[in-house]
Image (cartoon, rainbow, N blue to C red; front, side):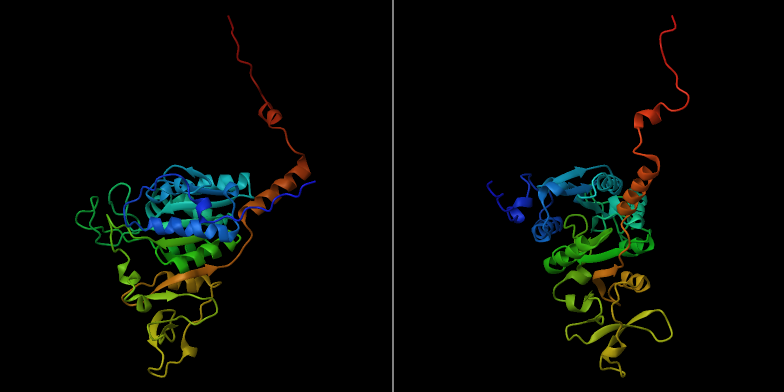
Length: 344
């Protein structure tokens, strides 16, 4: 008997499809798809076992550009379709691709229930604070005052903070990254994939056509050290060019403040230590933004719990043990039935 050839070691090229990528020049989506194509081989993923499910929007073209299985579904319903895929075949590696409009507006209800159920899959939420595909209307994450074709005098809606929404929905894994920050984006994608349950990655993604520079107040390289806080579990929340600034709870309150180590008797011992299992702390971090605070990046919250499909399959096994395998034809014919025929 001839031994089987060892499996081919896949590379990024193996996950690149033959489709022409149709995003605007300079769009942050290019960086995100490239990051995924690079990270999948490192995760040991295979093309035949990987599925990308998207809704509607610029980000939702994503499945076309991956040489894997994929579904380009309907507006806001990717979580529902992805849940069905995972329940039908729990062995599949399922990724949901959505945007701030697709996932948090028409799809908000589906998004919430996917998070609270803790289905074992990954969600990449492309957040550019605008509807790009339909030419620039304000989205659920657009800031107050945002002028757009749908809000020519400026938006008066209070924006949704995706990380806070996810935490409030019962999400067990919440993380953030910047589209062009390859190192940290790759790290959170890997952590989310390792997590047994729903892993959410919010990606701050620039739309150069309809909302250029939406996140430049914390993504610009010149000021990044002062405006970004990269979280590491078990380590103090320190940032700044000189690594001398940090976050602490204001004495006697549950409010976060920025302090400088070495001033007013402040030492590193006073700085908050990141505990990614602390949901309350994650809520506080989710709301921080310049100019008064740095933006918290990395894994905000990670607290494993049983995955939804595991509990469902176990329940199904129990039902079969108690009642037998079942017969769908018999079930449909159970009770009163009628035969429709020609009475003439």
